[in-house]
Length: 323
Image (tube, rainbow, N blue to C red; front, side, top):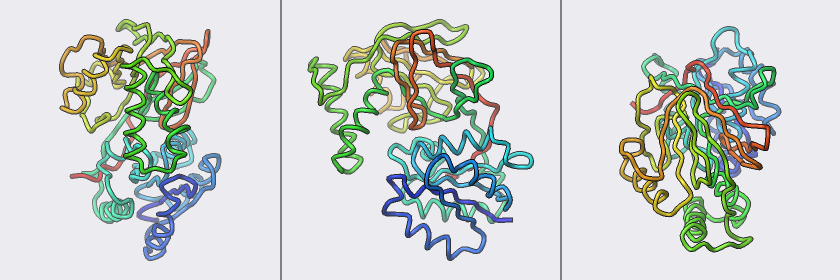
């Protein structure tokens, strides 16, 4: 039995320079099993192999797409005999929202050292549970995709703009995100339209079952089961109302500014704000024509007559590194 199984994707951006250090660290440990995949399609086979060493903790070392694919395969692939081990996520992606929620920040090697320290002792006090978002088209026979953070409307367009237009410039992440924010504000406040700027959001309808619906153009749509949102703001509200936490911001400058300020000051969901809508529930339907959403790095699209349905899984275990 290995204390830790480490699943790495060498092709993820964060691993291009860091993986040699990770390999050296793992080679010096007797109780860590390191498995590398070349693509997300290999993750199912990787987990079948990892299940044979019966690790106490599974650590995912890759970008958002790797984490999303690993969670989907882990909880739908039935590779483990019984319950799968708790999952830890290294801070190695572009946004690191899942890692942040689990207290993993800074250097990935230092985070892995902390995981090893916990795994060699009693891990129970560090195990937390989170529901996963199950995304599907509503077809009961189709296998859903699992994740923890979904961005849609103008947010999805912004993420795609940053990924396709800004990241290829090779700039540091912080500068890339700053330039993206400037471009978004230019289009929203000044109304500038250009092929080099983010596109205008398309109309969509978002329905939270038994709790009403919102329809129009939105600069921001967030659905998450994480306990922290962007800018480090904690989510708020009663968990009894439902595990899916949603924020919708109308596509106007003032509502977006109110939402950003609420995030900076940790007031997300705590105060009523005109043009900013919050909700919690257990099922959400997203409808629109060519309306993109991004679930932990993977793109999905709602089209006419083909909505996106979001539900949740039962609670699953994760390893929290912070005390």
